[in-house]
Image (cartoon, rainbow, N blue to C red):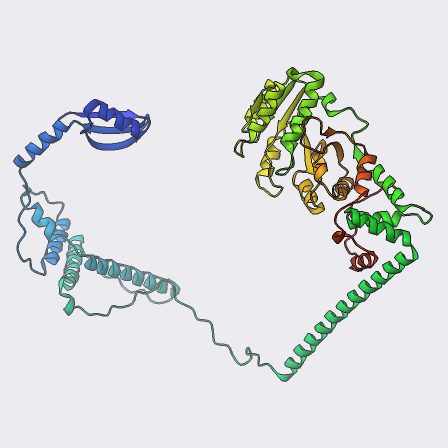
Length: 530
């Protein structure tokens, strides 16, 4: 019988070593961790067969138990055991090895008798603790003479006798035992709260009920007065605004025109408050004010001429990949494809990176894929000699939790973010996108899908209020023909044209109804330079 030890990093590798050395029928005896990983103790199947052959010839020492043991056998064996503990100092001449099984059977203690023994010991200790506490609480009481200490042998014999009586009681049949037991004594006494006296009990009187009713009536009256005050202020404010519109029809016409174009009420309020009384054409005046407040990159060098590392970010489906291809084609036309680097981070959608790779094959520029920030930094270092590097990111909804992770991934000092906004989106959606993608920290904004926008007013309104710069616009799918740089005048004139179905247009009465609501939400943070 040969035992062998095998050590490996994992249990799977250790078992493979066992099979290679001893065969598939090897017997694994133990497995335990070791410094190298896992240690397995195994032997060949021939050793197991040798053990099976030698097993019948090994003598057994199990003694036959009596057919019917008396009920008091556990008690007598426990008494004998206690006596043996008392006389443990006496040397025994010889040890009988043949009666081991009999002694084990006799010394067996039932769970019930052991629980009774433990319970009585605990009660005895608690009684002694209480007696000691009572003796300490009354030091003036005369001290009683303590009985002389008994010898250790007599105390052990007494304990053995008491234990024998308890074991005999536990060995009686269940029918002879008392069914009820004394409840266990808790260490901490339960303290009940004292019963309330007549002085503590408050009996509600008729006066208390009248006082509570009067207080409720007073609160209700104050609530009604506040509601009436708010209603009066609202109505008077609406009447004052309507009267102002009637006295100044220019503001009414301007308000109606800007609402039809999709501008926000906050911006309209600012424009109407700054409108002079002697203006002949309100629309032209408003257009000039909007042009001065809209920031564009028309006076700066083109994006493809400046170069640098740019990452295009934005919501899903706004045209980031197509815009990246347009900027790349415009740059490659001027400076050649050798000075251009393309990186894509869109590994979420199936086949998303293939679209940019197709544009790259047309331009003759390889497209690299980065899955995390470390690989992105490696690629930026690899493409550091390129004049322009464009990074196409994955489209994520503005409320997606992965949006923050994407922005953290693009927090490299050399990366400038360009926020792509769908010009056909609603004003509230554009506001949400600007907040989620941190528009204030972006290099600029690219307005995409200009050809799909019925009203450009919401997008221009949001850019003016957030003071963001328009880098370029995209008005189609052609690459690179549909990439343009428009000035503030062209964008504002396009926004003031309005459009849309007549079902969404407001007349004069609708304007009065719109502005009849309380104007509590003023245009915070909106500053126009008239």
